[in-house]
Length: 516
Image (cartoon, rainbow, N blue to C red; front, side, top):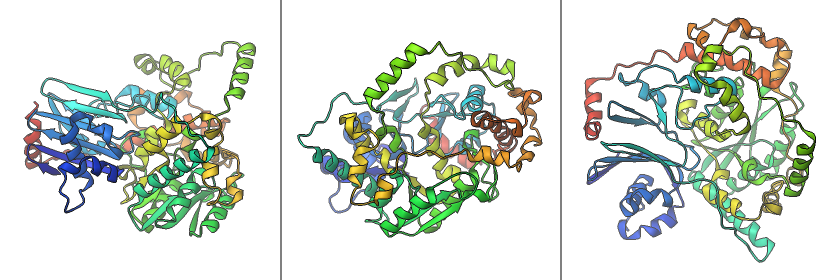
């Protein structure tokens, strides 16, 4: 905790673009030493008040108690890399980076948010970015601020990934040069260490991150591969990239693991059900390998979102043809095993229809929380250079064609850094579904005979659930696997140790009573 006069700050943050921010704040800083990231946040708040978030970039979640105005001001980073959970019960505000830490408060009930449970069963994620699986615990959405006073609690968006102005350069090389500058900045800001790991597939995004990072850090690559279960070329391409860059690489052979394979006790004990992955073993093994090399790991998420757009002309032609040929598609159907009374109570029929066409929760919203130490239980910071806000805003401001079609700008930026075999590799999804192949091997019959938690019957009619072996499509299989995951989570998410000492409660009251 950082205290400065009438202000105190609690932050989980890495502030990027430090030189530019320090230059803006030079009149408020002590020239003798470089400020910490927490000090930069507090100085930014002193300089600009609530609009300080317009000057902050990086991964952050923080809360500032302003004793002069008797209020809390809180913020979460643009993409939600750092978690921020809070409760506001009987006029008392509390917050944490850990959902389970808030559950230890005796005032917080174990009552579930049934709409979030329904969303998980249907989509695998909670579509409401402001709620959690627990009714009493809220989540501050990415790119939002939270202000708490005695009279009110206000959540406001401060950033959205859209730009109206367009950047135009006179020559084509300038587009690539500026992109390269921003990519190097994004990677260097996320390193700050002489040892790091990279979760590197054989695709263009993560190998590009590795190509930049290896110039500034002792880098170790880690790649998940399938040698037998499904057709997979990641071993070949990732090895080619690693050899070209001169970095060591470790391959995690995913064929060795079964579904929900808990290699280390506690891996499956997660604060929310959407963090339970059927492929948890290879994910956690990869992160442990990264943690054994250093405290920082980089990923290639999410180049596809901003650099892999279809060509507009093709898209328009395809759309026109579809409109001419198609009839109105039938409304999506709830899985038959969803309890009907639960579906009516939570309006799941309408949520399925709406969010099937208009998903509210981008993949990274839940993905990044799965990388957080609160979920992994590792002393490892996982960072994502391709979602640097400077880089994203630049990509959104340049002409989509040709730069953001098939990652054209990234391929040009990496032409002298990566081997041609990786540069020219087309965007390639897995050639098969590993979970479906494991089921077809017949090695997961135990998933049909699990011990049922009584609470599961509130959400699922198990009499109507098909056996795992009878699921023939990936969508049907993954929906069925969520039943098992939810049951496991219901059985293992209780109880939380609520034995908070009186000293801890009194310590919290020091700031809670000021707004109660």
